Length: 173
Image (cartoon, rainbow, N blue to C red; front, side, top):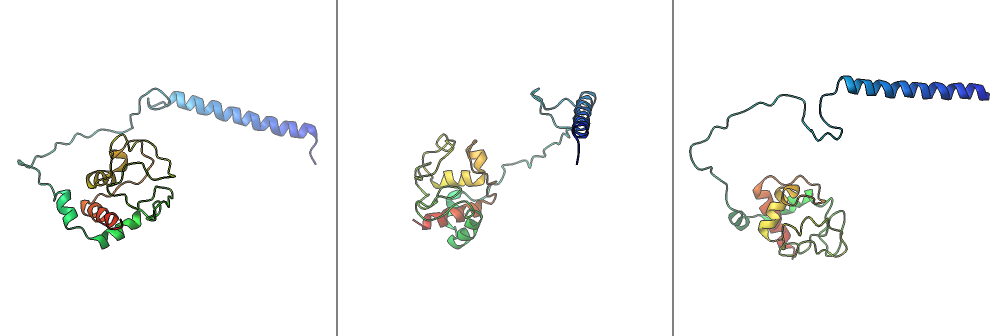
């Protein structure tokens, strides 16, 4: 089909095209360098910063109900629905780990103690026991509560959803 000379020409043409492409990419990066990335420590984003004044309401900021109040009025059935967001990675059966550790008996259980699950070590640095306050903080923002955690969930933004979920998990003990 092809003789050796034809194959050599095809390979040479391919290597030449690759060399032209790489040199062109290098030249374009040199000419149009914006100053960010590539190990220089500058991670600035292109664009303009817009300064905005924050208007103060002239008084204390009103906060919602406390965690204790939310837990006192928590709805276990609503917590079961909220758990639907968790069940892709967590199981409720004792010892049945999945992508995440099992959540059976999680309320008031020592942190990072589910047998057979490989924890990242980030949790024990911030908490000893999964009490309601620690669960609430973790469920609000896992990466904010325990930087370095393996859990990739963004968190539950509504305090009522977190309280309902904690009440549901507590009801399973």
